[in-house]
Amino acid sequence: MNILVINAGSSSLKYQLIDMETEGVIAKGLCERIGTAGSVLRHKGKGEEAVISAPMPDHNAAIELVLNALTDKNHGVIQTMGDIGAVGHRVVHSAEDFDRSVLIDDRVLAVCEKNADLAPLHVPANIMGIRACKKVMPRTPMAAVFDTAFHSTMPPRAFLYAIPYEAYTDLKVRRYGFHGTSHMYVARLAAAHLNKPIEALKIVTCHLGNGSSITAVDGGKSVDTSMGFTPLEGVPMGTRSGDIDPAVVEYLAAKTGMTLPETINYLNKKSGVLGVSGVGSDFRDLSAAEKDGNIRAVLALDLFAYRVKKYIGAYAAAMNGLDCVVFTAGVGENDAAMRGRIMSGTDFLGIAFDADANRNFTRGTVFEISQKSSRVKVLIVPTNEELVIARETKSLIG
Ligand code: ADP
Image (cartoon, protein in one colour):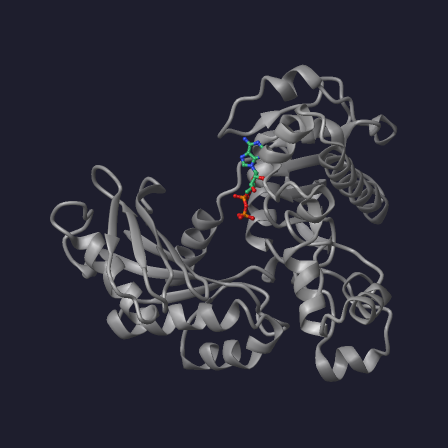
């Protein structure tokens, strides 16, 4: 059976068609600039990548183009839409309504709509993607797989903010956490690699990409995670500040004349390693600038590593122990120098880091970068959020 995985953003839509017999990706692509001029679909199916420029006034038009590309006689990979057994949709936020993936029906859609305020940049776009698919393939089963669901096991002491309790009970202000599919997937792969039941392990998973979050996985369950009410909390990221004293928001607004939304945008889009370095948000550019002697690039990299390391220490304390640290996502999987920086001075935790293995790592596979004698194992585990969505969808449709 083939499962179509859809990740719909406000002006973009990513997809993968996965053959569940082999779990191989048979086609994938990206629609960009939906709703504006110059929209384009990049589709990789059979043969070379096809770049299809066509108007996409809305997500319905985008989905129709995707289905045409998938069934096209030149670059398509399936005969008809009937060759798609189910669709799995990434939905960013489940609030407290779903603690696992669910099949989508009208009730589920209504709940997602109710929760749209909690992630106004993401959930409305996810819903548009779902509605567009339902329109063109009304009989195909669809599942919603939530970024937040894996973190629903966090205890109240981890998910509550220390503000009046009514903010939680009346307004649902609490920490939710994100990247859940990734943290769940890499923690399970780590346990399989270590040949131990996940129930017996205390793992800190570091998803370090453009957006970054750290999770404490105790016995296979998320017990704490660094992102909060929104993805702005936690470690610094490409363009996000991460943890910051909220009083800074008022002070900055007063001193610069920025409005409140502009100030939040400043923390989301202009901060992080971009803001500190002035160079960029891509860690490859920062490494290049570091080699050229750019002091602010060095500062941004140091600050990032320091803050990630603090979370690892905090989560070892939260779990009263640590068996494994996992690095994943764009930076975690590729940036050996950053992994080395984060792991420096962690021997007190029982980590014997293997700097040679770290430098000479093999990409695309689970790879150990701690020494054989290390009590705490350090692993690189490539993440695959699309595969998790496809697997969850398959298990829901039976
Ligand atoms: P997203 O959060 O957008 O899913 P990814 O997990 O794909 O992000 O990570 C993207 C980031 O990974 C890039 O911004 C870049 O900083 C980093 N990255 C990718 N490849 C490398 C590399 N070879 N060396 C260092 N950093 C890398």
